[in-house]
Amino acid sequence: MTEHKNIFDKMMTLDRRWVFLFLIIVCVATYVVDFEIPINTEPEVESIFNFLDSLPENDIVLIAIDYDPNNLAELHPMTYAVVEHLWRKKVKIIFTSLSQLGPAMADQAIRDISDSLKVDKTYNYNGVEHNFKGREIVNGVDYTFLGFKPYYALIILGMGQDFRLNFPSDYYGTPLDDLPMMQGVINYDQVACVVDLSGGNITDAWISYGQGRFNFPLMLGLTGVMVSQYYPFLGSGQVSGIMGGLLGAAQYEELADNPGRAKDGMRVQLYAHYVIILFIILGNIGYFMTRRNRLKGGN
Amino acid sequence: MEFSDFLWMTCGIFLTLATFSFLYKDNPFYKFAEHLVVGVSAGFTIIVLWHGTLVPNLFQKLEDGNWFMLWLNSSEWWYVVPAVLGLLMWTRFSKKYSWVSRWPMGLYIGISTGIAIPLEMSNRVNKQLYAMMVEIDWANFFGGNILSTTSGFAQLLIFLGTIAGLVYFFFSKEHKGVFGGVATFGIWILMIGFGASFGYTVMARVSLFINRMQDTKAWGVEAFNASDVANPHYSSMYPIVFYLLVAFVVGYIIKEIMDHLKRKNA
Image: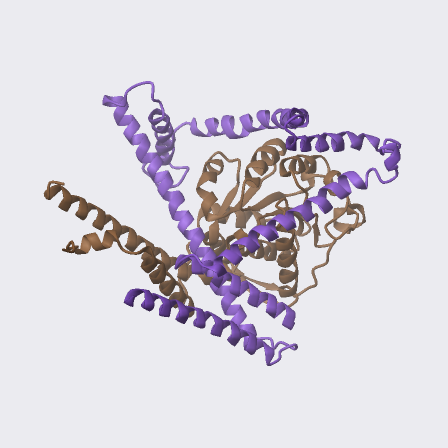
């Protein structure tokens, strides 16, 4: 005789592949249907945007592209949003990559953003219209890409003494002293802030060996998995701002009036979260009801 | 986009589908994608370390020396010392001489610890303790946004939550009475923290799927030359490759359904 299963038993034994299928259908449907959802910005992202937006022309920001392709989905949109914002303002950038697959990420971002900045654009943020005249982004003038070196903690400490200690030449083989923007740039003292976009433990090294040792303003762009671990550093003032996952990237895109892949994905995020919350609620109802039935039955 | 780039893009889409197929069940395409990632990562790492570390930091430093002089006649001969220490690590493969590898390992750990302990203690312990022990701003207690980290409520919650969380992990006293109540409050705080991490993790995983959808859409756009800027290299091969992959995927799905029905009827 087959055992009779009520709806709650069925909920508890539901094949998880139905959950995956339902989630995929919702994600694809919400992605295909093009609509916008409002993005509310948070103070931790606003503080990064406001700091970078206040920098004068020709200031230098160090951006650490410390992520591999497995974190590209969340961190690449942040790179695009931050770098484009800085180059629009003619702020110079030193790129490093202390993750071994990071140079390819940085190289791709530099090429794409350089291309997108060749055309005139109008941005509207902080209630003001900003007209950007398209221009050529030049290696050695607008940016320097130092590339990758292993043992990130030692590299971060070394850059505090002199960038040339670990990177006598840039990623493309040009000696740093031959690059116009690196004239007189010795170490972190000449850098307005460091923005670390990271998908791993390198962030810890930037906090302990970088900000803790050399006391520069440090801003983080982190994957969703990591972000809750780093909020205590925001509270203690060791970190000046945090962008968390795709949501953080979407908020920066919203603030800079530069919609990209992050904003494009937020409608999918919203409905995917509704589905997951729905399944969590159903799973809990199923769990408590089967437990109640079991207790009633004396098992 | 040139045709070769489009083929690489198609490979990416195929590997995406192969990886997601694991959600249904394990299969040879998933295994292929998995092994490819591991193999490529290992190969890439070796090349990066060789060209990024050994070549500039060792071989180029010693290039003015001779091998028959063991490079000790090089102007920067002292780089021979870390090279020898590095080679000693390979004694791990010998049962008889594996103890020798403790020398370079000891040196490495000693230097790392010396650098790390003062900075880690200062930045991950002391500064966090200072941040927890700020004076509670009672004037700001009921005003403004209570979830803001600067509000008195949040400061009090951080302080009490930290103490309660530590009490939960104190097992030398039985968790009963007031002590038990504080420990229970501590586990609630921990669970709220884990819940926040879980929520962010869900967002991260969905982000990966969104990225693959965006790339798949971009692949479709390239296949039919439907982007705003026309592709000067576009040819009829682009949609043919697109349809070949789609036919392959649909064919595999039909085969799986047929197998499933056969098993069901057997």
